[in-house]
Image (tube, rainbow, N blue to C red; front, side, top):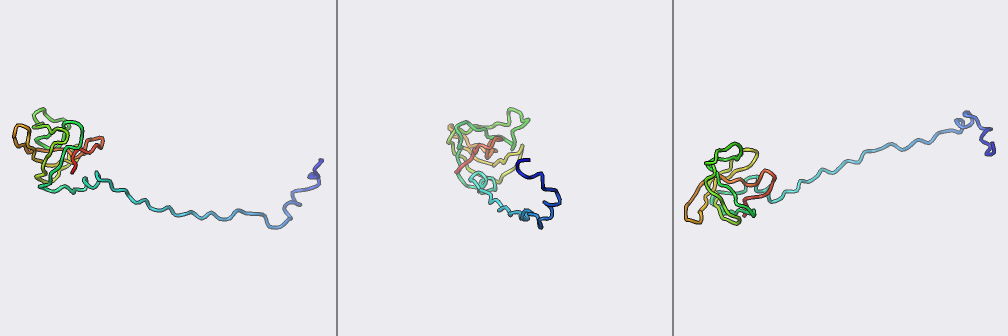
Amino acid sequence: MATGLSRLSLSDLQAGGRAWTPPPVTPTPEAAETPIIEESQEVASGLFQPGEQLRNATSSVVNVRATPGYLSKPGGDIIAQVPPGGSVEIVGDRASADNLTWWLIRYRAADGAVIEGWMAQATASGVQILAR
């Protein structure tokens, strides 16, 4: 061979002393992620209090229901509808139904009627409904 490698044997290569070994791998500890608390999560933790005035923060009409929940309900369960920006008052504690948080609210309709019922805090897709 032109490079002269044909004169080397395996024993010649091994006899050269200590072979190179890679340094040990030391895992780097990962920093624990600090959860980011958004306003909607703070609200979900129960920060609304009885007597607090809230508004419908959506651009849609939101149903007020006779009982918490929205799945498999009869049509008569909807007792009022709050327009976008409409004000409601929290009058009781929250309840969980259909994987949503519901608040007992009081709503004064445009015709002067006062309605007490349940309103979801957010939609099933996570859109915030009730806001300060």
